[in-house]
Length: 207
Image (cartoon, rainbow, N blue to C red; front, side, top):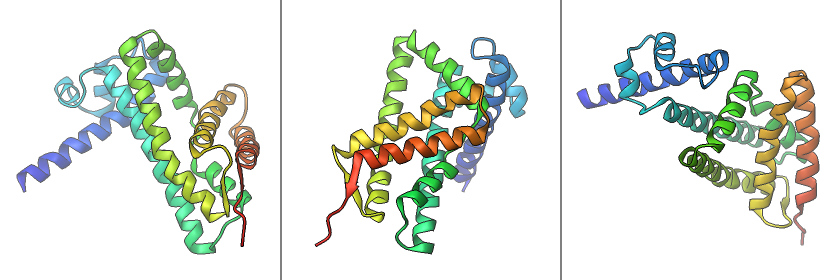
């Protein structure tokens, strides 16, 4: 029982540090944010930080992974709930669910863009970020495959290509948050997702 309590407490500490990191990174910038500021935001000591993360870089990579996993869980839950409730959805309904479930966050956009530029100059971080991106694609592919089958479609040139295109739309359209409203970016995502899915998939022939 003691081991379970310690594990749960450690997980809670880690999560609070992740939650505290984003506003600090967004306000201060990656180059100016400090461990102390994040610990103050989370209500912990430096010891709590270093028992969970080796550095701010590792904290950010963990934050990136956490947000990616959360997005996939949210999309999966939304699509599954709609399928169980309404039966076979249409392409338009599926795209609308994707747009609703995928987060649009100005803070995250600012911080993630800064980190990508920072990682591009650091071979180890660049490699780690590439691995995270590959793992994201691998996690997304089964979801796309299931969603296509539910609407009676299949990839034209391979599931991997469609998965990469959808991931690029999700990440790339966040740039429009610089000078556009959230609703404008949502509409842009909706149009691009429809075009890409229609272009890279086709109806499954019926016998």
